Length: 336
Image 1 (cartoon, rainbow, N blue to C red):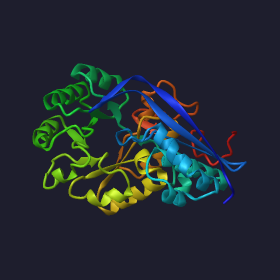
Image 2 (image 1 turned 135 degrees about the horizontal axis):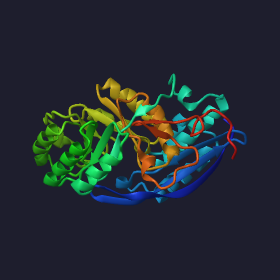
Image 3 (image 1 turned 120 degrees about the vertical axis):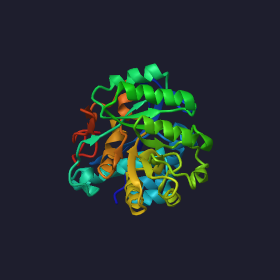
Image 4 (image 1 turned 30 degrees about the horizontal axis):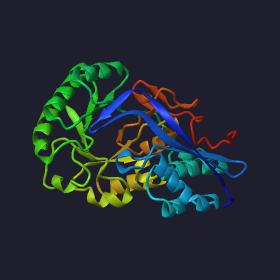
């Protein structure tokens, strides 16, 4: 392959309102943006990192710089998986390589991924943890939403009140909850019983990473999704019998290339496949939309939380998310 030039910049994305989950409150999201060029074609990618692993901007930049020589020498996407670890830095480079490859081929990235057409996807919209009344108000504000995901904190009684308030505010939607590692094993039975009463259809990551064995033998009436517990392709073999669903995020696994491999392996293992995202711009959401074409559950509302998105943005309409050809990976030559 021809030699490439690699450019890396950082951006701070300010959130419209603080975003609270178990153990964390965010008012901004720092991302890295990678641009690769061969002198004619350009490829771009954005990485937001994995906050609970210390994969911040400094870590992502260090990972990218350590691989700069190999990247600029023109390595392939598969080669990238060998020289960079999973994480936000590799995600940014991998997605830039996808767009570069699409431009060189004169085909959209989704076509190179074997997708017949990039269809709009029904997505969840997230309600961050707050008082039950405030969360109900937030749920009502998502007037077009057909699916809502509620962030919980591990405070069992309060969390049950939160879910009940959201369900009362939006009796019409598909409803899931995300524990973000906040619960103990002893809380699972009463939690699931309460969630069933509110017609909740997904319980995501209730226990802390490292406590996966606590799920052995637990029979949940609600599908349990692994997020923080299932970072990359290498961790999928541990999922059956503990998790019913795998939530694939490109920042966790290190890019669309590995994300697609994870989706195929999850299917082989009999798992339901979900795609999620960290908070970022449409530049990070558009590649995930390709993976989302193969997923049963889609959680791609990241750009809705930020004050300012990129000029060409994904579109949210009637509960669906879609991307025009001008967002990312169009296969057309872009101006630098």
